[in-house]
Length: 210
Image (cartoon, rainbow, N blue to C red):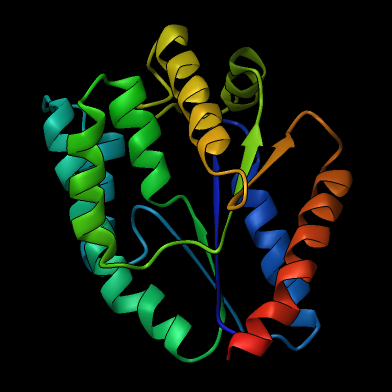
């Protein structure tokens, strides 16, 4: 039954909520599932996440960001994702390598080939079976975040977030078989149903593969 599903999207897209909704639905059906996230789901990852998201007393260059995210990712794959898949679980991850491609390459302007090579080292051959992109206009997504203290990325200007969004859409267009693009301005319940319809199609195939 092993299946690897990742959720991607810009700030305020609702991806974390939808990842939890899917996890709970699978669990209610008795399907072994595991929910994790990037960065911060391991002891090492939590330390890295504090630097990346909340570091105010330091300057972090784009290349340092790239490497730090992949340090956290490599540990997550080794410690959480790969063991979960070996146990036959549906592993759901809130952000994965595509986030780094969108944010550090399209957003920050790092060379796309360099980002992909470093991402490739960190993921160790573990690629998603399905990537759900919750797509939302930048202004709408950022407005949803205004009620709380913004992190380093949420404080970036609108043009940065627009480049990230365009990057995600370009990545999805390059691999339509893996990506499911969902309009994140729709009601939460409708979004969850669209995602479930796609996941339920993949579950029998995962069972046959096992």
